[in-house]
Amino acid sequence: MNRIKSALALTDQTRDILVGSHVVPRTGGVFARNFPFQRAVVVADSNTWAVAGRAVAASLRAEGVAMDRPIIYPGQPALSADDGRVRDLRTRLADTSAVACSIAAGSLNDIVKLASHEVGRSYLNVCTAASVDGYTSFGASIAVGGVKRSVPCPAPRAVVVPLDLMAAAPSRMTAAGYGDLAEKVTAGADWILADALGLDPIDPVVWELVHDPVQGALCDPAALARGEIGALGQLAEALVLSGLGMQILRSSRPASGAGHYFSHQWEMEGYGRGWEPPLSHGFKVGLGAVAMCALYEKLLELDLADFDVKARVESWPTPAADAARVRSLQMLPAVQTDALAQSAAKQVPKSEAGLWLEKVKAAWPAARERIAVQVRPAAAMADGLARVGAVSHPSQIGVSPEDFKLKYFQAQTLRSRYTALDLLAQLGLLSETVEGLFAPGGYWFEAAVPAAG
Ligand SMILES: [Zn+2]
Image (cartoon, rainbow, N blue to C red; front, side, top):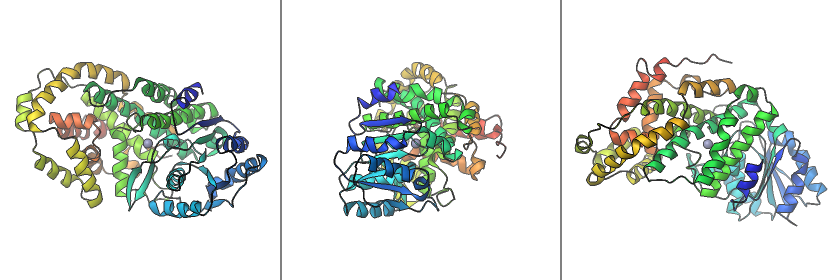
């Protein structure tokens, strides 16, 4: 846990993280030292209240913390992190001076994070599953008017990470955390690429915090599926560190790349939102990680030594043509407006395209070597996800090959952040590379659907 300690020296929002088995009874102490003389209100849903509610309340009482009546949301159907829920909690918090002491996994933590911020308070969260890296990140993922957004707001001041509780959570939640962490592999490759092109320099300290623990945390998916505390501790620590890395940089760049955009696309379409349980962030992101590993395999074969820059500049899209392309990919009005702005922000004007492509050509050999060390084969990534019980093939969530292919192109339009999808698009090679993945011999044509169960 030394890594967490060194990370806490660099964060300005989260100041206190307690990780371990059987640490729930110490929640009151963590609360009291971070919010001295303040009232607490326990916020939970009926599931998290059932596993830790009374113990958390007792620990607060033992420290002499004054408490409001707990706020307990129904756990079934699963809580969705939307603006209506945030408004409701904000109203309840505005009626009291109490600081939220939430017992929450992903969605409820996001709701508490934003609602607390809106009433000008921080909060403490007891994490109930190793399912996301969002516990310690800056920003909350909230559906605003039905469209999923990352809303800026501070991370919690204090976090309690009880590993025994996480190990007892439904195994699909650990599998989701594995999926969220798996995308650090491809997000890291995207960051290396952007760094090599001078777009988004790598911060070496944050890189180390976020990426050093990833390999170790992903290496034993079977142990995670069995709920072994040792493996779970590694996963939880890696997820917490990812969040802290994002908190330090005030950017999700270290931990979120194009693999995440596959998930964002489904989230904005509301795909799987009404399922019970809803299709999790980590399941969608894990699949995005496999998708990007497959793409990187093709990308690494690329030799740009003879790439014809002049010919590519000739066919460089005009801003109008690019906007038309984005519009045809993003039919939902709210998504389209955003995607048009994000895509326009990363468009290189034709007058600069020649210089830019020469720069790409020059940087590619060294970038390729660094990326080759970072990524892993798609089949290995899919195997890890399958072993932990996460989604590793689109057919498992009812997505057809045609639909899934489209996701590569849609994902490219969603954010101005530069990824491997942008590199291929600029080279004019995105279509043929993606098509190749779905043609005989390509990864998605050949990939076997994992057996159910
Ligand atoms: Zn994520």
